Amino acid sequence: MSTVDHIEALKAKHAILEQAIDEENLRPHPDDDAICSLKKRKLQIKDEIARLTASTRH
Image 1 (tube, rainbow, N blue to C red):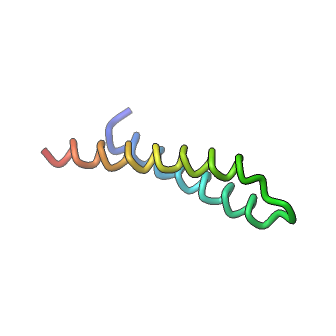
Image 2: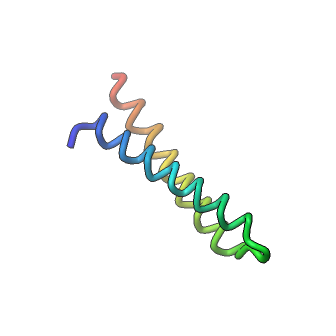
């Protein structure tokens, strides 16, 4: 898998996590621990995308 393909896959995972967070927030009693976990994973993916993007520019 090329770096560009990997970045695109990570962006797709990021979007899925964003959707999961939105869905959890729409529940009558959102699970704060689940939301926190999803947000942490989403941030990790965002950081990895940024790292990979920066490394492809050099």
